[in-house]
Image (cartoon, rainbow, N blue to C red):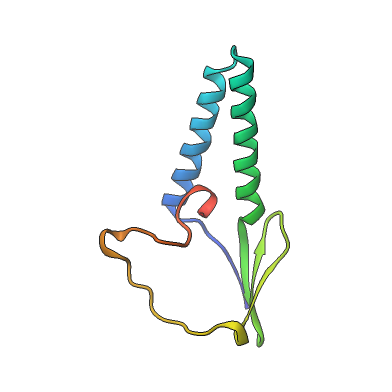
Length: 106
């Protein structure tokens, strides 16, 4: 069974907003070479890191769950390695302690 990953509206908005802020920062520092260069490097590294881990699809077979990622190889979780599974209930204030929900889904 294979299922395509869809980003939530929140993740899409956060990703677009962060990328837009990077562009605004680069444009506003274009006359200051060292600052602009540093900001361009940070933008490139953050974007590449997001794309490196960005999930494309999830597949499950009889032995494992595989997360297919955009730039890196598949991440495999064997069922034998899973210790427990439980229902997730949001923490107080709906704060995410781990998991996706931001820049490129992370």
